[in-house]
Amino acid sequence: MKECTEDMLASIASLRNHTDIIDKRTIQQTYKAIGNETKSSVFFPDDNATILLGDDTAAIPQKDGSHLLLAAEGIVNHFLKSDPWFAGYSAVMVNISDICAMGGLPIAVTDTIYSFEAKDNEAIWEGMSAASKAYGVPIVGGHSCYHSNINALSVSILGKATHNLLSSFDAQPNDALLLAIDLKGSYYKEYPFWNASTTTSSEKLQKMAQLPYEIANNKWSKVAKDISMGGIIGTLLMLLNTSKVGAEINIESITKPEGTSWKKWLSSFPSYGFLFSCPAEHVKKIQSLFAENSINCDHIGSINQQPDLLINYKENQLKF
Picture 1: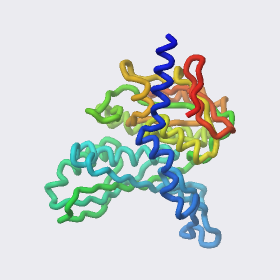
Picture 2: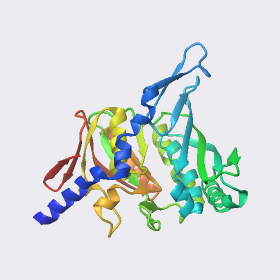
Picture 3: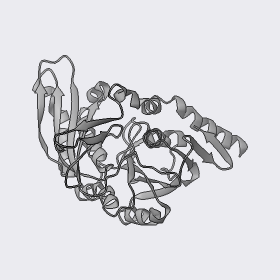
Picture 4: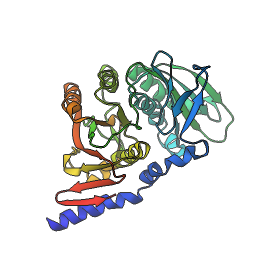
């Protein structure tokens, strides 16, 4: 048992060197040149609106108290070449997750695609169209460029949050930390991607996409982050960075697929996965909402004042 625990802790500690997690820890360097916020006078000509930088989605305040949501995702070239249909599908799917994580609903997507000729894009378009239909979010335009030496794809999305905005900036010490993941899926090919999307009905996908919106509407939480590359650990580190807090999590409180190692699961990208922080009195309400929709939601720990990530396993604690 001792050796098993030691192996487990060593496995988790090794995630510090995982490329995707390192990327998440250093992603703030992307907007370092322009600071952590910007101003917009488009909708506030007399009083510029502050737009915080650090979430995957920009939340642009409106005078009626709502927020326009704008996000974009680029697809890495090797993924586009090796699996063009799923790359196209994923480009739409992950953008929708970014909007949902802000407590919003998606409106429409546009794309920018580069290739040598149109036939090179057929599988990509089929994947994007499949996701657009499945999630009920239309592709309304974009830009195509031919005679390019490489294939490249990016997709942008517009959404709206009409109620309480969710973000990764407001996690507070003593908040409960919740992890919601659709576990009814399987790993997609050799990728560290847990696919519970392409095997799920359109009706259910669209219903699940509305759950963070309901949580925001009920004011049960102000904080959410969708789990992406870097998995649970990488995404949690991003949330802690923007909120300038720490967290303590219990590995044994996390549900994982049978037969999957902890190291793999903690760094995996689920098609439907979100972290939330909330006051203790709202934990059961959020868990019940997800349970009613057959989504697993674990209470995995809490937010701390000290800006460290502490990981507990049995009687041991690892400072990540």
